[in-house]
Length: 272
Length: 282
Image (cartoon, rainbow over all chains, first blue to last red; front, side, top):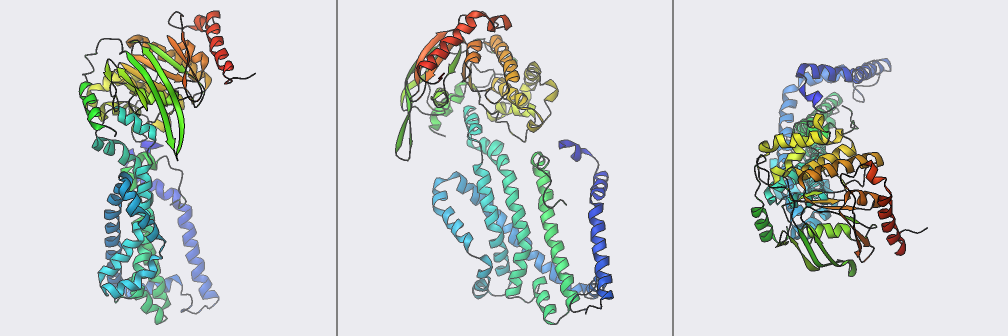
């Protein structure tokens, strides 16, 4: 239930968390074991499907290169994401509050959303070259729309009766915003933030695929070209870990900011 | 939102008193003259209200009963200044209403509590939004919550409570600042019959203690008769007052009163009124 989970000491919570996930962890371990033995048993070639042990050892050998690439990619992801959040939430507020902005700018945004953003990536290379900026822009572009759309929905979702009650108190616009509209909008804003977070890693890798000389996307292409399949796997795992970490960071913040909403939500699809 | 200047002068006049210095009991008189309203949507005009004239005495309990769509909620919003009428005017305590009137408490059919606040904080949001000191009202809020049977629940979140308990919270929220006017728009409409009966009894108690002028909108005929000093019977579109019935029954309206013959006769009178207009058909 509500406050109960939050008031317990952290180690105890981590322990119960592990207990709840013990089945999942066991299933993953089983999968890796099966994979390892199947590859050896059927003599599958390493460049087709390397065993987990080989992926690990190859990764350790070149971890300096890979970690440097991971750092580059992480910078692009976080930079683009933060940029998207910083611009889209104020913009969503403007759309929700101003009839003018809603009828002029919002339709344009909705229309632009239809463009396959990834298809624009090559254009950015022409315009902005190889550096960090075009990558930031692509991450920004992919994260921007879901955050704007859900935030607009959030800011507009106030029950008219709640607004009538608030008006009957003579509350100032600022008070109405901070006491009612903003808290009311937060659950939907966080939905958008999580969708954006999940997209951010994909966006960065695609941007690096198009044109780059560093980052995990670049390394992935290099290793793939040289048929170094264990390294390809290692990078895929690392990218997944980065994506997951960002997603859970946002979800952790959500738990801190809107515990009243998180605790009443049914168990999520991810179940993690 | 509309007419902010008028809204500001309203809130200035209704400065929050400290909770331990209650104002004298009794409510304010409300004068409704020639109020009419028209809704325009997609070029279509719908006449919602037609010339409503009504004088409400200070401290009177008025129930408005009518079928769905007769404009009773529209009337309530116009009185509260949440909606500007197409014609006519409303005076509360001798002052013309222009923009949201703030010296009142309001309750809707759904409790519209804030999910992120506890029951106690949901009551105190009334003070918070008015720019008062919620801490100063904490004791009063606790006492009122206890009076409606929510004493143990003040630290719970709204979703943990039943519909009836949430609506009780909404009523306490409407009374915490001791307003001289209470507006209720089908406040028991979403509750089951037993809860409804108990809420009716509790509401009468609360009203008798302070005597605030009360507007109670309902489509329950016996509920209206049981609570009101006067029942305003409205007919469907365009809504207008069909009859005004003085309910001359002793208070408190105990079981003996609401099962009495005269009580039944009042209910009959209203039912027949609706039958004449085809609202109820046998």
